[in-house]
Amino acid sequence: MTVGGHIPFLSLQQEHVETGVQDDIDTALLRVSRSGRYLLGPELEAFEAEYAAYCENSHCVAVGSGLDALTLTLRAMGIREGDEVIVPSHTCIASWLAVSAAGARPVPVEPQSGGFLLDPERLQAGITRRTRAIMPVHLYGHPVDLDAVEAVAADHGLPVIEDAAQAHGARYREKRIGARYAAAFSFYPSKNLGALSDGGAVVTSDAELAHRIRLLRNYASPETCTRGMQGVNSRLDELQAAVLRAKLPHLDRWNARRREIALRYHQGLSDIPAVQTPTAEGWAEPVWHQYVIRSAQRDRLRNALAAAGVETLVHYPVAVHRMGVYKARSCQCVLPLAEGLAAEVLSLPIGPHVNDDTIDAVMRAVRKAAEEL
Image (cartoon, rainbow, N blue to C red; front, side, top):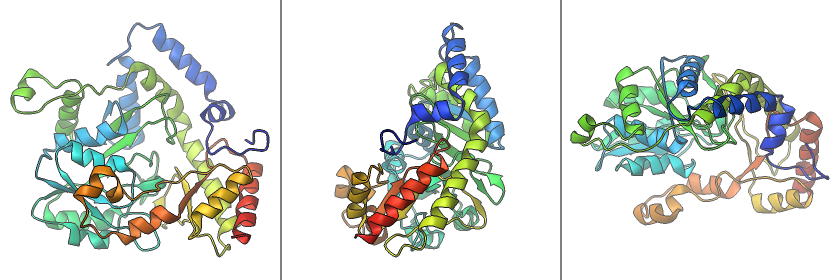
């Protein structure tokens, strides 16, 4: 995994080769290139059926990106201008952008103290007469407590839409994420299940919802347009569908390796005073899309790791309500937990291709850097 003494945060080329999937990808690409079908063809249809089954659900609609998966789901559910949707304060900006793209207003709810995920106990305070949905995000591959979210949603008659962009294969109380509600996934190349370009999908048990999303992803139709449903061009192409089909049979094995790495990190780093390691709830089977530590001296720690040849990333360095247009819209928001996380989070290298020697080298570098803070 090391390249000339340097440990990259991510190498998709190495991941494909070292996990043994490169030949399968090459075969899939050649099959499509020779087929003459490049959009809305048999590869897409097959992938949608296979991924729905994998998620223990009945319908899958694949689209052009994870953002589109969220946006089209919200629109298909009737979310519109003037509505509000509950979102986490600490998340990728795409979660908020989807709500805005549907014309609604994102209403942030803070995470649990000491954690990353939306706090169900804070949901009640965010609900108003304009609230139309709750969108929990299974951030970094760890499921949100869906029972607790559902209890609040049921009290107010609100649908739950899962942002599962980072949670492919994760389980909540032994059920796959995507088995319970409408769930939106991203197939961005770096995801646990990633394409060679952008891609996304919605998994649902609601046949009518799936039908509306299928219409919306392909310009809609004259009938729906007359009812005010303006369609878009958001179709997962045959090449990406074929690549995802090649990768899907390996996903559980890859996620198991991520869990091994996360456990190794936890055992090797949890005793360092300057570092806070993430933990998994007993009712969850996370897939560790990212392994995110926290440090009050994050920037110094990151610089020291870079000097030692360990590449890291920050997910996410600016709280969403402090970004661009949201800063103007949400200037009254007081979200200290989200802002604290933005200043402290640091993602370490992780992936199914990363070997134990590399993980040990990362931990030695973290320990040395932390001692010198």
